Length: 322
Image (tube, rainbow, N blue to C red; front, side):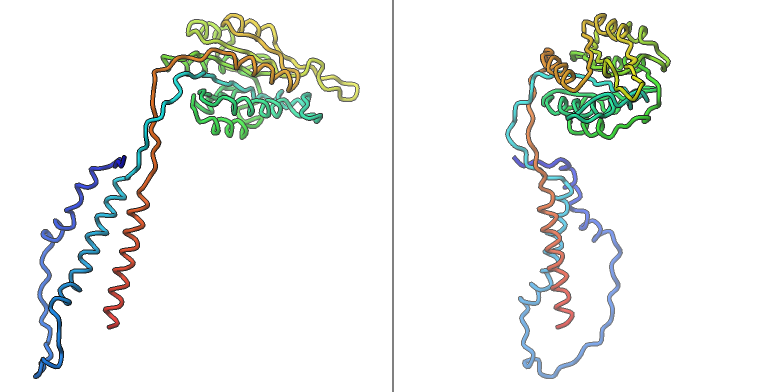
């Protein structure tokens, strides 16, 4: 069916008529007339002249009506389509600290840094979450909500891909990331409140400790799945071997205390297996909703008004020349 988002615009329809009556009358100008002795030599048609005078007015009225129709935002509303009544709600917290630049992960046999590997696998994970709501938190010295919980997974994926090391500092504020996620979930009544925390280090920054954040998460019934990112052995560089530096004890405690689970991701295959396990999380029931597809139609009356205006201008130019 056809609907107008701003139907009140049609109240402006008599506006030109009001302007016509309210504006002062134009003074009559005396124009010298050419006297012709024999008017029979110049036959005229009163009907044709009257029609020619009224044509611009008719076009102007139609153009005004078309412009108001376009301004009222017409749209075609389709039949109701049932929307998903079940969905998961996940917040992904990704570590952007300096240690994430460690090149101890492999993708297709090529050494890459930890953040690159997380982006590659997490991108596929987000694409498979159709029907779920995903949020994104980035943290280092502080934690920031990069994307609130949304069904727009493409935007979440883009924001993750555009993130880079050093964006929010160099250290690791795990406590603040958890606290911020709890706060975001606290604004929602119906949610399964799941946080997936990906980090490669231990808490070294922030105004809230992981233990304090854990207490908040337990109180608000937020389930936390922690993922330690980094190779067990590290990458061998000459005589030196870089370790992972992951505080596994703290991450395990956080996960178990919130009825979650701790995972260790040493390569892309393990991360993919972790995401498969997260797929088994229960979905939450939601009130049955329907959505109706909408198609904007404003460009049709707007195009018609433009064409009629061009026609009126062409007629005026033709009269001036003849």
